[in-house]
Image 1 (cartoon, rainbow, N blue to C red):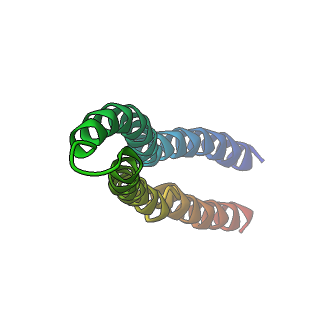
Image 2: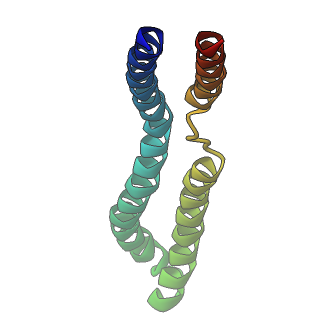
Length: 124
């Protein structure tokens, strides 16, 4: 039975190491997701403030050649398209991101096989 107790201790140690690996791997994979989300949010905020100031300037410029409502409509449309493109890029990056801790999953499978071999060899 002492051999099985040793296997149990080693298994617990191995499990702790696997959990630490999973944590590190998850942080590594979530970091790009956080950056992409920040890009989406930042793009939205910059787009709102930038569009307000640029809209005002461009509308004033264009209103010397056309009615102010038409100048607002044209430039507002251009800014809206730019904002949609920026948000779409960030959204696509988030969709394509895989945060599954694949190394940990593979390592756990190997550990399971090792543990089963250890138990079988100790029971013989």
